[in-house]
Amino acid sequence: MARIPDSHPRKKSLESRQKIVDGSSMGLLADSAMIAHGRGEAFDYLLGERTTGSAREAIRESAARLRNARRPVISVNGNTVVLAGDGAIRLAAVLGCPIEVNLYYRTPTRVNGLISLLEEWRSKVSQEDVPDGFDGDWKESVEGVSLLGESPNFEIEGLEGPRSNCTLEGIGGADTILVPLEDGDRCEALISLGKEVLVVDLNPLSRSSRMATVTIVDEVSRAFEGILSHLLNDSDYMQTEWDNRKSLKESLKEIGDHFSE
Ligand code: PTJ
Image 1: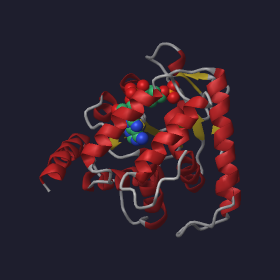
Image 2: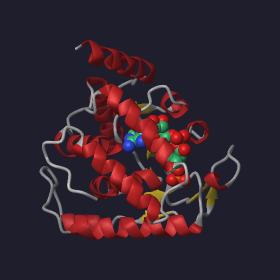
Image 3: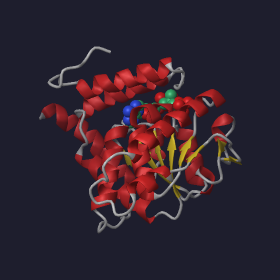
Image 4: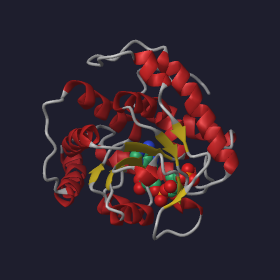
């Protein structure tokens, strides 16, 4: 890929697009991954490619809920691993929770490939400087992150087909699930199992956005960075009685406001 100058106003967006192109040629992504990414890009453009005020609130609320969770888990699909696998590892290290590869279009080759990519990220992140506010042995915490999904031993009730397969150690036994780019049916099934579902989705109108306990209407890598920062430096904040509908309405208003600014 040609080097994009730092001054290019859409550098981050072009780099993300390239990650999707590369992930696709490596066989890690679903055939429709680029369509999903394009839809996300369009909403991000409308939102001004920034974390809006309502997304910041949802990020803060999600961090508090993940901190309070008994058994949190981060569920990742192909697009999330390719765009924000490093961020997922940092979050899991701080939370002491597993990451589960859980795919809509599940094939053993994709699951294994995505777990290998996460293993590479785990090794790189373990060498990074200790993040501000982290108390403990960073290398040990990162190396301890377990990567699940290869051998499903649990089925999500109310869902048919391969996307119902997950693990008891991860999604099956979790009380709180952080799940970017989720599909509406599965989000609904997880909610009806009594789980708290924290969704990251740039589309505030999607069914998963509307079904979730808390929806972060933001780009997945920005959302992960925000959650990390709140986990490490905002421990006084207590979770609230979250009104997700109100938050989604606010994000739609922010789209309108962005264009009248
Ligand atoms: O890897 P798999 O097999 O699990 O398949 C993954 C995709 C994403 C292909 C599959 O789940 C799918 O088709 O998703 P949808 O139904 O297109 O939904 C994707 C949602 O994520 C859309 O509402 C997009 O707006 C949103 N989205 C796309 N890219 C991003 C995003 N949200 C946050 N950050 C992004 N980078």
